[in-house]
Length: 240
Image (cartoon, rainbow, N blue to C red):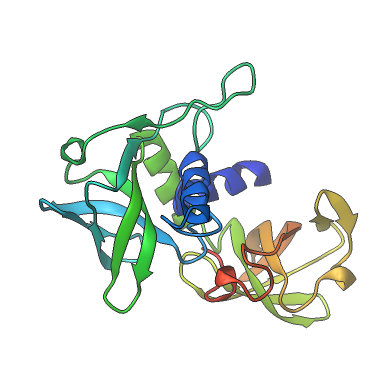
């Protein structure tokens, strides 16, 4: 799987492109999460295990149970199936937005992404938006998480020791190490860089494979700063 595809799938892990954009707009007006990237501690994704009049109970891919609270002010939508993990890209380059649905359209067993105010201690989300993820995207999302640490990594650099780099983050929010070799390529904003340019604190996306128990990187990309800058909300737990 190409690195670009992994990055696109990761957006579904977080929430989906269109929903993130709408959440960003809501945040600027004071009605929702700021920055729009719910991967930065502003939401969660999981499978619905129970339904009530004002909340869903979900189980995340890490096995955690979260309560997703919603109200009449929560926007509830359905992802449009198609290529890409956010809204489908039309021929003219325009994105097809998600379709508005009712809470009753979501059933036990469905995969949903919820964005809003997260209470990590209570394991709950006060949802500004909820997106029903189409089954194919949900399947790919779960397959991608299963491959974390096997074919890809993502997180914040905590140490650089010669050819070995340690990251903290990803779906398991744990420390992972990769090594670079003569075949590893490095990029930052599409520009080529070298391993020497990688610094502690950088946020990386890495594609590669495990060889003899060691993750060997083929492609390493430095990601931009999270919303809010270096000390913004994205610099709490590392990215998902």
